[in-house]
Image (cartoon, rainbow over all chains, first blue to last red; front, top):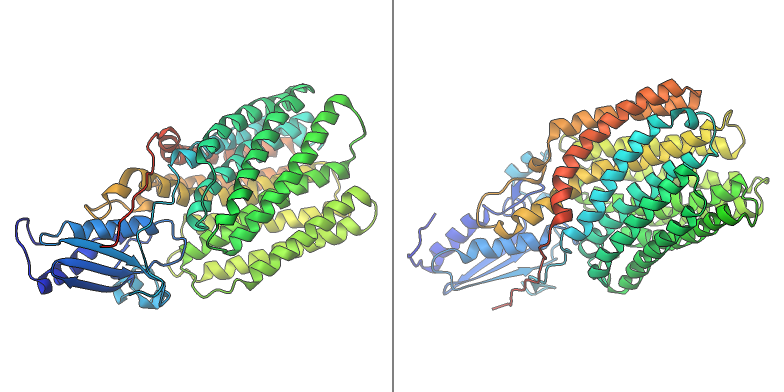
Length: 109
Length: 434
């Protein structure tokens, strides 16, 4: 993980952002939002990070918390000037969007 | 990324003390109910027409199940249905009205105090009408019309009807305006049991089962069709009991309700089947609950067709529904809802900043499994004792059930009490799109 006081170029910010997102997990399922397949897109442009993500269901009780957790996790990356987290519903999430480790953890292999 | 996107919106969850206080009160009432069963064992196997039975039944229905459902709906309405509660502040005040109502109503029955029943009943009527009114007026803000929304809407309507009947009977117990027949009482019972409580439980079960099983793609048609079938059965049963109790009408519509119960069990089982992980606490409690529903439905049909050999079979029917269908369902869902609320209260602000425990780590799972085993064994034993007319069996098994309830209570209290005492507010958090 990158330490404080170091400003990164966008490509490295991008990599660091994905790494930080892997630390944000659904406390009910015990799987991070990347392996769950919830993160559809991540764009870094001159230090501004925009994430497009979804939730497993509409009305997910942890929805707002996960969105805010993502925003917090990315905001603490040195060099990040701003974070926008956009919740999208298209395409609708399905369990098939999970990675292999996530499917194994949830018994879906 | 612009298709139907939005930024983080304001926190929808109410402050945890609102649902927490109701859930904590529900746990306490559950413990008292579990203690009451072995205590009143000789009465329970002898008759179904005793004020002590009415008191115990209302402790379960009002103190335990209704308080729990009110608390759960205060949480689920804004989060699961994405509606806006009209006044959480009044919901906090209403808790004290309901608590005072239950606190006086149940002892009045137990002591045979005929004035106390309508007196405290009036508090309950006011409190429950206020709750129902608040919820119904909040419905225009609902954004997610999941089947649960329709089930709860119907349930709230039946709650109002149940309250009306209850108040009239309570006043009549004092002033003796008319004779209350068994079928008139049965109408009131089923308005509450199958109407308010049954529909709320079924609707919430559908929502939570889909969520926890990641059951995407499961058709909602059976749930919606069954909602109609259940209500047809309930309307027919209640009208039959009131207007033509000696005819075949009550039995016919009891059969419709029983068939609807079967459909619900089958449909929910299909939803749960999509969960591929090892079945957990909540799923096993749900299986026990659904099995008890089927037992209860069978006993109901036996009673309505006049085939029950003893009055204690009516008590067994009520017990199977209250301690079985509702009891296991509430306990199982509590192992999800309470850790969720506790996690939100303690850790939500830190999410994304540091590693945090999982929800299941907030529950003492060994204690929870032991509690489940004791509750199940106790429930089965009490039911058998009621059907056989054996007070000793009811008392012994009732004590087992009480032990299980205490185990559940220990887990639940650890989570529910801090919520009930919480003074923090969720607040509004908005992130403006940059």
